[in-house]
Image 1 (tube, rainbow, N blue to C red):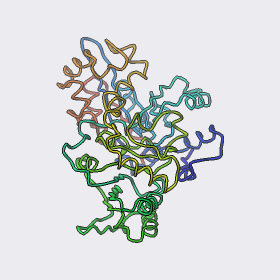
Image 2 (cartoon, rainbow, N blue to C red):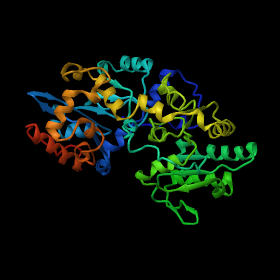
Image 3 (cartoon, rainbow, N blue to C red):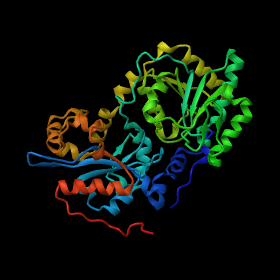
Image 4 (cartoon, helix red, strand yellow):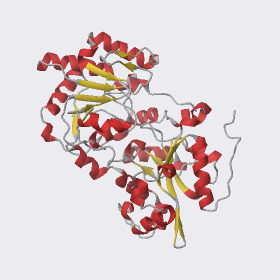
Length: 422
């Protein structure tokens, strides 16, 4: 089965189909297929360990790992499941396709969708469904507000220029804002494309961008005329510089109607800047589950330039009305991330000494075990004090890391070199 990207959902907030068919359309695409079936992308497969395996006082506890390439990982490294509960991540709002995972990231808690899915996939009836995605694995102490920072941008967007992001509609909203409110918004847009160039005078050269994005940028030029008057485009910003950019902004805008969880939404809230999304963003996969909690931002009521312009005006003229970081940390951040995973997988209720719901992040046995095994507290492991043991990219690096864990816990090394070998 080949993935089919649901292009018809890009800019149509009202799909005229039964909800079950819409769910099937969404589940018809996964980024897993790209990373697993194309050997040239094996070097880009991410592998994250939010909970390491530990052995302490005679008790062994499996860790947790997640990836968008679980099928490749399990087939290449068969004993990985002796050490980890393997969680599949589709990197989209679809349910993963992996048949070897121990649990699925599903982005949102949507009981009706889960029920439909398990009725149609009876082999997955006991699969733990975890309402998270890799975008939620955000270090909220690293991506945090920069104190005493002046708000010099009205709007920031950190998003590719690809059609799913609806950049032309954002451009039309900027013109509508000027017409309706009598001034030009100061907007910075980071497209995440190193192939583009920004010169010192602000000139933006996107000739090197692939046509899939270049054609959208051409349409923005056609809409705006003098694009530089309305949008300051950046090809790329180093991750360490993002908190300052977010802190300098009065709000963030995402133009998508459908995609995955979206890291930008998490990052900007963690930097205490309100987020603006269309109310129809991922509405079919979310059900009643919110994009954000509390007064963290605003939903744009209608999928129109004027509605977006009005929502931007509401947010930038009422800055004191929002508490995005406070709301974000009540529900997300890495401590909530691991609590949610562990609470969803029955293995830990049965095997983690001193288990309590929503308290894995400060479980005393786990903290003692982690220090005994890795010489850091569990909190420090979770928050990147051992990144060489918790986060690698590419199958060769996964192999190196797994060899360390296999040796540490006495697992005989096996490697299936024939899997996907070309």
